[in-house]
Amino acid sequence: MYSKSSVPVIILLLLAAGCSEINSTLRNCPDGAIEWVDILKFNDVEYHGYVDGSEQVDPAGRGSVLGEVTFKMADNACSDHNLRNGDAAYLPEGTIIYEYTGFSPDFRVLAGNKVYQVQHNDAAQTFDDLFDIHGNLEQLSIDSSYDGRTLTFFPEGEAALFIDDFLTLDYEGFDEIYPVIETESGPGVFIGFHLTDGTSFQLTYWVEENVINPGGFATERMQEIILSLKEGLELEEE
Image 1 (cartoon, helix red, strand yellow):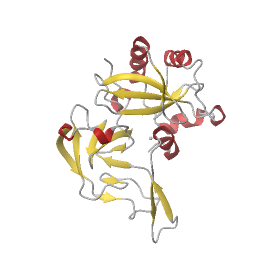
Image 2 (spheres, helix red, strand yellow):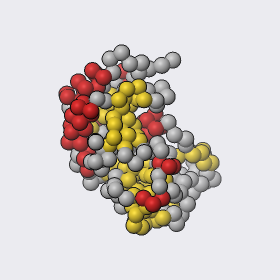
Image 3 (tube, one colour):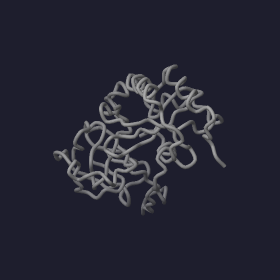
Image 4 (cartoon, rainbow, N blue to C red):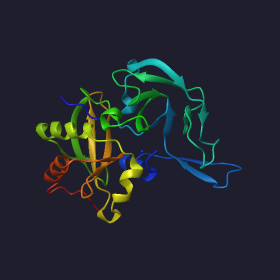
């Protein structure tokens, strides 16, 4: 079995995860209404709460206490707020942050009975530093950019080759790949990572530019695999 495994741009998080936002109208803030994404920062790692199936995670997977939320941004912060350790978009102050058994806390933590997964880590040098998916990936898929459903699964051999290259990519950060993304080429394809704990997540891959969220330049082999698998697939729908 193989294991699956930004603050990148908010729009990309919403595209890749299709999750709800939090509206908060703040007093004394020049911006008025603020739309927050579900983020958490702890120990210099920025996490997001858009992990499919995380509401079904067994509480028994809760490990040691790591810390707690010290500031709830919704209703309390303006849009120019600088994210600090202990900040969360909507988790209440005092919410305990736990290890998630089987995963490095640099990749995932548990807070408020929910999985939070890394979206940015300044200390990471490669994707392997970001995504602790060794031994936890069941399948890879290409998913619809329209509704997120699985269009096709990677054959086992191609999945192994793709992940081997994926984990060795240099982590450049979204600001580095953004200038090469051609918006006219569409939203790219979604790569689905299906983990053994029953959760999954998606990363956006811009095939023509050969770059992948949350900030890496992919290999030619990765590009060739995606091009061969997406032939005949309806990647865009009306």
